Length: 165
Image (cartoon, rainbow, N blue to C red; front, top):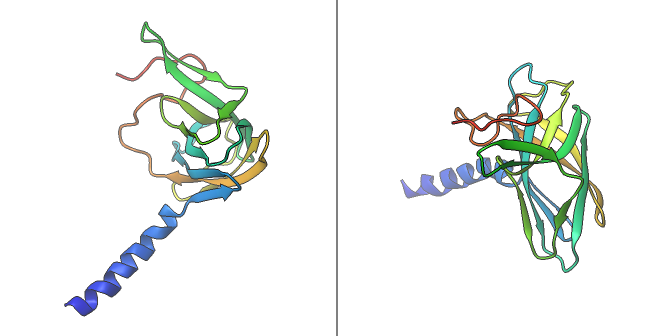
């Protein structure tokens, strides 16, 4: 039985590596697991998420994002003291030296709008992240299975929104 355990474990680990290896390193910047939940079939908007890790000693800034599937912008979602959810475009995002910046549901995210090329689970969406110092970096956002209950913002509308209960 043990003689089958090692090959089986090796095979299972190998199968998991492509998902775990969806990271990019550009000098001191690491772009970790850029992804987007699969949008509805005819959706014109979608959110994108990632982690940017600056392992260097110099600050940088994410100035813009772009993609061939449509318009891409840096957005930030927030909920004010009255419980009103808003989403605003960010002109830039600081990526301080030695710090990690998280793009996640309900906070910073990439907003894909006017999607003209349909995307589905399993697709890889080319995106260019343009940094002040690192320059333009090409990555791919992995389109992943949409969760049955999405937490945070509903991207079906653009502009000021109300949170889901």
